[in-house]
Amino acid sequence: MNPTPFHPRIPARYQPYLRLGTCSWKYESWKGLIYEKGKNYRPDDYLADYAKHLNSVEVDQWFWSLFPTAVRLPEPSVVKKYADSVPDDFIFTVKAPNSLTLTHFYAKQSGGAGDFAGKPNKLFLSHKLLEQFLERLAPLGKKLGPVMFQFEYLNKQKMPSKEAFFEAFGAFIEKAPKNIPFAVETRNPNYLGPAFFEFLKKHSLGFVYLEGYYMPPIGRIFDTFKPMTAPCVIVRLHGGDRLEIEAETGEAWNRIVAPKPEGIQAAVKITQENIRKKIVTYVNVNNHFEGSAPLTIERFLAALE
Image 1 (cartoon, one colour):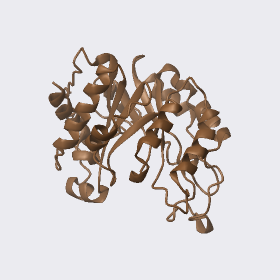
Image 2 (cartoon, one colour):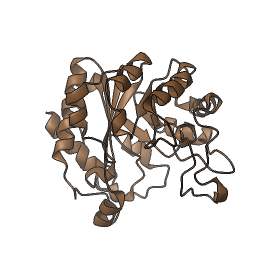
Image 3 (cartoon, one colour):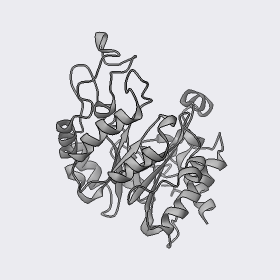
Image 4 (cartoon, one colour):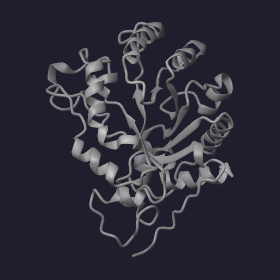
């Protein structure tokens, strides 16, 4: 077997307050980075090796849950398998199902939607569905970190105003369990302002910085608002046009093809400031950000030092 050359080390002074990971982990092209070149991996084998190097991972596979005939929630056996694959001090950040956060079915809804495309989603902000989802996550135990509510761009047909969003989501989150940290990702740039961050702070909701997807650069958001709304913050180095970078990489995620040093430096600045305030920062890196999440993590750690 060829040992992996990927050995990231979080500096000791940052360790209590920095969780570093990627968005998903099942990538054959990471052999020679995180995974061993000569090893024959089955789909369930990757996570255990991943957890030898990093202390967190983002799970987005359960986000894709809204289908016309049924809602697809995590299988408890799969959740347990993930929990059993990692050490006790490992943390999962999990995207809440889009069946909770979509006001309407997608206009190009997959799964034989037919007349469902673009129609209202009756499960939007369903407290019962949140309870069912969290029950499915129970096998994670203390390894469950922040649960992220990712909202798409909400036009006025889907949400009349940000005040209407505050009212609807505020009523929903008031009924949510208090022992689980929640965080919010908005894709409405016009929501970002004092009222939004005050709303998050009032409900002790973490802010999700999103670098990419036509949102303002995270460095600008930090410099303008210094959003510290909860005991944890999530920085998602996500990237922009997926099709463009997928074409450039051939979906082999083992090299940097689109360097974004400004985004990395902003993530470092946010992390350092949060640590001074003893706020836990989760840095979740996507392959689509620069072309290889593990190599971006190495660049982040170099900049952090």
